Image (cartoon, rainbow, N blue to C red; front, side, top):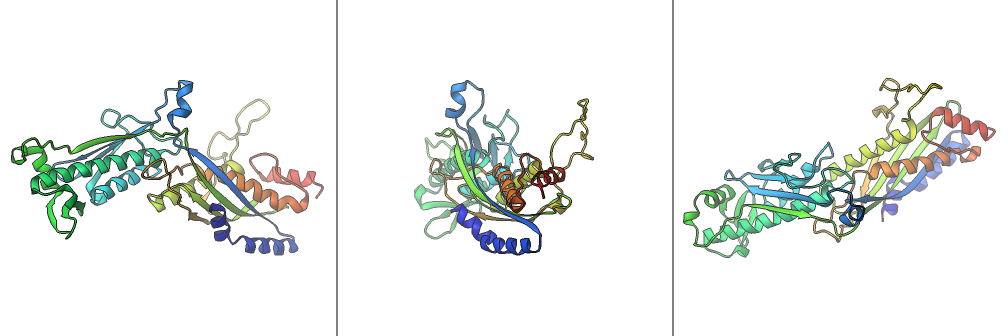
Length: 362
C-alpha cells in the first residue's frame, strides 16, 4: 500500500519520461525508490534477557482539578517532536474538553510516572496508549460520580464541551468544575459509600519485542558531471505509522528526518589532516543541509492501526532518516548508470562524484 501511494504521488512514469528527455539533452538525472521498515517502541522481550536497565514501559496520570482543568502527567518527554501535543489531544478527546483546558507535565520524575522518556520512536506508540487508557479510566470515574450526584445511570451520560451531558438529548447536566468541587470538597452531599476517584494512572508495556512501522520514499536528483554537485529536484514519502494522531505533527517529523538523512548522505563527515587534527570542528566548516537546498517534500499517509494497542499508533520519529539515505543511494546511482559509474561511500561529495565518473572513464 505504501509503495502504491508513493508511486502515485511522485507520478513515477512521468519522472521516467522526464529522465529520458533530460538524457537526450546530456542532463544527468536519476530517480530512486526505496522501501524501509522502522523498529519502534522496544519492549521488555528485546531488552530484558540482556539485563539492561532500560525502562520499556510508559505511564500517564490524569487528574481533574477542582477548577475543571485536567492535569496530565506523562513519562514521555518532548524535545521538539510534538509528543506532548499528541498526548494532550488524546486525553482531551477522551474527556470532551478543549486543548486550552488541559495542562501536560513531563520531565519531572518526582511527579510523573516512571517511563523511558524519548527514544526509539515510542512517544505515541507507548505514551499515547498509556494516555488513552488513563483518559478512558478517568472518564468512567467522572461519569460514575456524576451518576451518583444526578441520581441516574452512568450509561445515560457522556462528556462534551467541558460538561456532563445527557446521551439521548445532548443536554448539559453539570459542568466538570462543579462535579470536581463536589468530588473534592462536598463529599457530604454524596450517597453513602461513594468514593470519588478523580485521578487515574495507567501504564503501557509492549507485548512484543518492538512495533514495526514501514514506508516508501522516492527522490529525483540531477548531477552536474562537470562540478560533481547533486541537486535535489523532488522528494516523496508514503508512510504507515499506524493511526495518525496529529497529521501535521507527523508530516513535520517526517520532513525533519528526511533532511537529517540528506545531511548524512550528501554533506556530513569529519575531516582530519595527516596529523589527526580535525579540520571541520565548527559549523563554519562542517556542512549541514540548508533550507534553500532542500526539495519540496510531499507526503502521503497509509494508516494500518496496530492491533497490539487500542490507540493503534506506531513509531514515526526515525522513518524519514532511515528511508532518505537508501533512496539517495538509489537515485544517485540511477543518474550515474549511463556513465558506468556508481557511488561507493558516503557522503556523496562533489569530489567523490567526480572521482567515480573519472574511474568510469568518462
